[in-house]
Length: 485
Image (cartoon, rainbow, N blue to C red; front, side, top):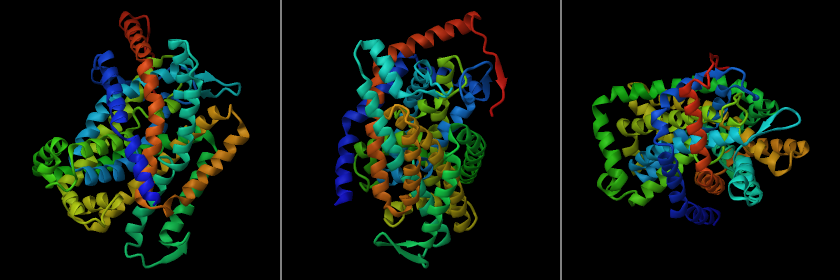
């Protein structure tokens, strides 16, 4: 009954109106910015690894991006892509990529507005994100008080962190992957919460929650210091293995790409009607794309607001690289790996294979090594990916709770322990419930943020035009410093 209720709510919030709002916002910003996400991608990647000298903030631009990437590069890249492709067909990957291309413009606007409307608190910390550009920016633009909408976003953000994308989905993915590797036949069983679980699940829950607590108590600076080391390492290692599989099956790439494009518009032509209609492919692709890169969700600008910079456009460019790296690069690699390895064909005929198990199967079948070797690689990648997502989303959720409670330190400390407890119990929930809850909270977060981006699109366009005018005339000097820590 709970699952049926969640599915009903999910189908309502992820209906046509929200998808039109997500894609429409990306199209609007892409047009107003004149394809900036493609024209200025090279400069954005340069700014990503060159910090701005003399910038004001708590962490470097790269540190802020690493925190944001730590929250986005997670189970969405491994489990999310697999569940989208299995449920929506190969065409879901096509819509994920389209969503990401438009989402780069959305992410750019979020990063820009985060810096423009951020505040510095009495203790020297910086706070910014959708709640402040909703409260300050929309009031400035419309003359009306929109603080209630900012509070609503903060509430949904805090709930998403503790009950959805930040905790339960991540640790659940780690636990399922660990069980698939260490105890696939469920020989070592314990009885908890009215169900049977592998002892591996219990150990995973305790270890991940304990490690998360050690980092989370240290705040944004400790989170940034950990993620700037782990994120680049894990992303590069995962991409290398995916590329090895893709090149090993290079002759199958044209066929796989053809299947992806055809299935995006006519799934039955590829799947034989197994996954339903084009709308299902579009829905799964957009929903999992948003889960993976969080463009339009309003989470990344919370981290961007802490960046050491005096130029909101510059940070907007850095912020949008997160979507490029996360979805266009890493998710595409995962999707192609599922297709060329043959794992997708197996998964659609065997309902018992889902989530991380699909990607583990792809890594096992994709290279001339044992299935256990492939499963270990996925388990390790998922452990790093999901753990850093837990860290990054704790920062997001705490900032939301800070705004919601007017900066009550006691309330924030209480929320931290609630967050850690959610990590502890996450592995004991079912996969379908976990992902449905995450999708619902993502949708609820996205709606207020997207409304604000539409209203403030003129501000984004004006700031962008002014920055590049100053840059081209020499009025603004980049003063780049190659130092990413």
